[in-house]
Image (cartoon, rainbow, N blue to C red; front, top):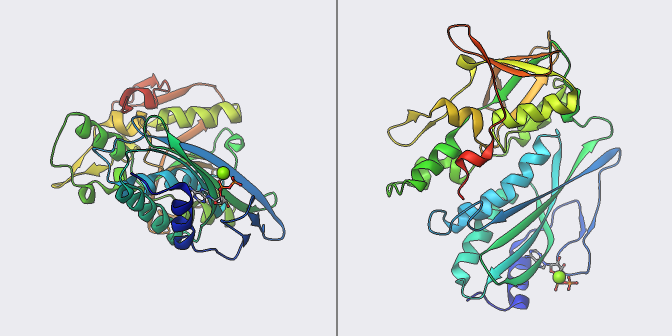
Length: 320
Ligand code: ADP
Ligand code: MG
């Protein structure tokens, strides 16, 4: 059983290192934070629910804590922002071992440390069902420099970071009951890397006209950019970077790369003529198509045949 609420908060407080932006973190009724001069605040929140986003029999607690924070950091990355502080609301079942909570916090705080994010508060309660974790991440971005979903214009090129489909392809193996799923061979599912460094680079160099993180799948998230920007898109099936997973490594099915989320790669557009490096912060960047005036999304296959790409995001490969 987890230790008492008071003891648990004290333990979390000992492990959370307050950073530069934190005037007062854990321990008061509200956190007091500094936003750098000439910056705007970014705020994002995401649920991680047992049975929906993770399963305790599949995911080590370190992975659950890591993924919980990674979701929030990825949203900050997608705006071109810098993460500043995180808030964690946790509801834990009475029978949950304290060891599990410790593992969760270890995964969470390790990632927080890596990105200089301070855990500055949260809430703790008993859950009548499974583990529920709600993360809030506060970030900052120089005033007026934020990269929105709504900035894509006809003629802009479309890019993605990294490779797509690893997370959902791994989930499928888990669903099929494959026992030899070692998290270390499937890191993109268990320990996804939020693309903070890429987002920062694109913002600093003024390269991206619109951006989103791929949390629901390329087809769905590209549709979000198109809707918000009032445009359409044409992408090339062959250009889509399919992830490889497992050991020995094999490429995932194109459907995972197109329609599944939780890879937390970035999808962005840039004006034609902007020079986009083929690697940014060690991450490969691939051009996959271009924005068009006609408000639909089409994919062209290797034979040159165009077909409409409908958003078929997360429902298909979701854990439920
Ligand atoms: P209150 O009753 O005023 O909400 P709490 O007793 O819930 O205060 O929390 C005390 C302090 O501990 C607050 O600063 C709160 O932000 C922090 N806190 C509570 N739960 C967590 C958690 N799971 N992670 C991080 N900080 C937490
Ligand atoms: Mg409280």
